[in-house]
Image 1 (cartoon, rainbow, N blue to C red):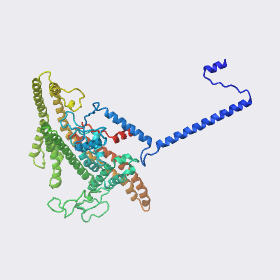
Image 2 (cartoon, rainbow, N blue to C red; image 1 turned 180 degrees about the vertical axis):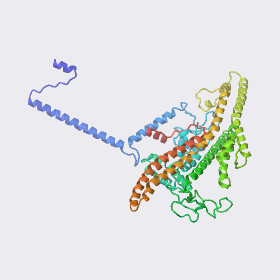
Image 3 (cartoon, one colour; image 1 turned 180 degrees about the horizontal axis):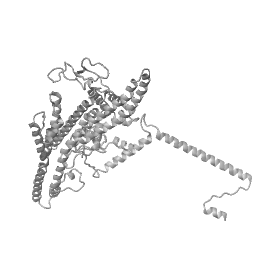
Image 4 (cartoon, rainbow, N blue to C red; image 1 turned 120 degrees about the vertical axis):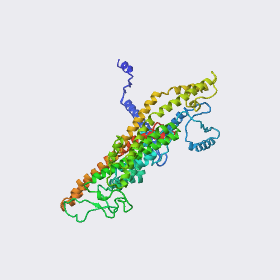
Length: 599
């Protein structure tokens, strides 16, 4: 019964030895069998270890292992076959693709050279089709290590359509400059500049250790450079002013005495009326303003006006790029019905405001008018009690501004509607002129170029398709869209101009934080009695340096960066940038392998 149970469960049974000699003999045979199995197992482990060492060995100095090379090879082969599946045909494969026009000759020579190397086993050729396509071409923007970070900042908002003005061309300069306007300080900017110089100098060392710094090394360098430049304009070095040139202000004679308020006066040789004599401080802010009781009032006024001038200037550049887009697209409607009235509105109101600021700076007046009051009187169509350029000019410019609004609102929908009616009647005439049932050629550009994937359309079908596309035009939708665009632009210019005041606000915050940190740490240690001040200076310097690195080099840099990014995305790019393009993505082994490595 036990034997049957063991057999039913697949248990191995062994005969019990009848004598000691038989048991020793079986034990010796079993030991030999175990030793053979152990030798076989060790031989197999040695074989696996040798094969693993072979697979993990580097194929070349500094290269990948053999198994990694096999994986990359399989990945590339799979992607090649996946791309070949997009071709059409059986014996001769054909595919439609985009390519850079500037590289057409290079592509042809490469195909000819590789085809001749195949020795008649295969060949490839490029057949150009320069007929216009209904499908918008992809956008191909060449980048290098310097421009890639700026282009990626623009592409994060949206990619420019084919032929559209690329904001990155201006962002390379305006982005770090506006950052410098917010962060302007020679000392803090120098610390940021040193980080950028180190990252550029030791780029290969930090490429894999600190990839984020390697990627942003050039923009960090540029931001530090412009922060130092604007810091010289602000005459600010860790909240301390310095005298590079002779000050145009001097204290009066007999001002000495503790606790007295001294009112500085213009130097006798300083031409305060700008009549051809010695002018103001040659570069930046006069050092006499540092430490003055009205320093904050003066710096606020100066930085606020500079912010408005820079903001309006950048928005005007955006409108000029809108002109360039309209010229490139050969759109007379956009040029005359949008670009021109937008520029007129911008120049007549905000350009006039900037002109008054500059005029007031360079022309000495006995009773200088208030620019804010003048702009309020201009907008409200009121009387300016103290006009700067006469009472008539502001009213004329405001009337032109008001007339430019209906010029933006009414003509474009009307012209679009008339163009639609003309094309519609032309489509009816074409449909009536083609005999029924006769296909005279290719009518769909997408099919002719290989994008449609269907059968070719005849002339009649093509005209019917064009007619159906024209039927999608809705004049009410066009009017609503134009109303929204006009309201958004008119109100947006006001809000965007006010938004540029963040340049003043961030600069003021940076300067005041720097003053507070310096006065509460190092200056307080210096004010202590001797010899305690010698010890406290060392201690407070460490505290000041830690606060400077943590707040002004950490949080403040990030804050200024984000505010500058917003100014470019919203205030600047909204004037001309549609950002509805799609990228040109050619087949590239390197890009494919980098993407798979990230996954």
